[in-house]
Length: 501
Image (cartoon, rainbow, N blue to C red):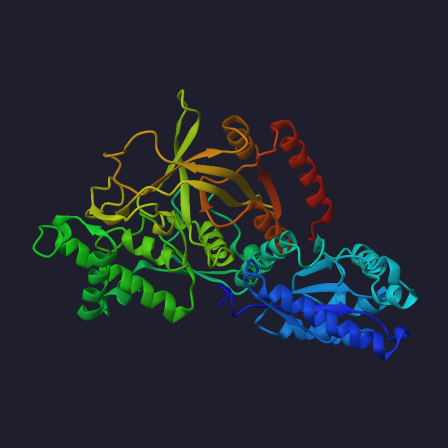
């Protein structure tokens, strides 16, 4: 089963009536073979569904409008097997509001040199037809991804996979509901933003609730649900003796489990797939949610601390885009640096809320003091993130537009144990180097709250930004600070010229 099995991408093949029924039958057969081949590709996480060959303006507009209304359809792949006059595509392209991928391929990999005749040329002319299609896309300024190569090449499947993951993330954002318990941390700038514009631009709806609403949900949790969660804690984590039955802090574990179940019940009842809280507004909660937040993220929920609804949105979207991966994604914050002889490194963590999906070890369930929040000590999971490649992404509101800031990183093991750091953490080396990555992040105004994904690559983030028409400032292994600064200036001019009042 594919990790995003319930999502579909429609495969549209363009042609026309000029070539006769025999050619059109062959076009349809070839189209179904390609769609089936892509559907079987292990890398592609969604279902690829072949649709009837379109050969008129009416059939094109009809299929595009049907794609719009199908809740399972997250995007459309278009390919011109033959020449397909592009004026036919105008009504459909203007109507289409799903992401579009233009696949430039052909059915046959090799040319049968000794057998080529004009019938073969008329049938296999994607080199011709796709240029006509590419023109009308550019003329209409239609945003799309272009993938070039033979449909059986693994690199083609990989690029389609990246785009389809982004399409699923975009689809999720357009219907995402975020529950915001309390407000933002007072006097903090970057976690604030225009929630109305986020709904207009991305589709995400951010609804505010009092902590009393969460308390009411917690108070309705029965003892059996709490006991079941505590059994899960003992089964999945190394629970410290003081939190076990008979330990002098066992009551804190019971309270943590009650918070988790109350959160789950509240979010599920309201259809929320992401949420925020803040340590400055805990009201009657017995402790700041720690293990509850970590476990909810592990189950795919988005989270942002201190009221950061933008990062909560981002974590949920990146969780969806990385579905089926085995390395994880988490809310994250750059805390401090190692600038010693072993090379610059970043130590990322948070007070409590790092997702165990990125853990390289069996987490331990512990309780430690927390100097902020004014509540008893919270229960949390402690672990170190696994090494390997990753990407860190932040979402900021610049006033006139949203910007995604992204950086390729390589996670590493800490240089030494961290016995006195009682929180989950990750250590990484930013690409291409510390100076470029940190300097570029500051130039772009990147947030300190981010999403760290070990399953996604930068291409998927770029595809998502294109679909959402959100600016992307990307720092990768080839970036230079001088070029990055120039790119930001060009972005400023571009978004100023293309912004809609």
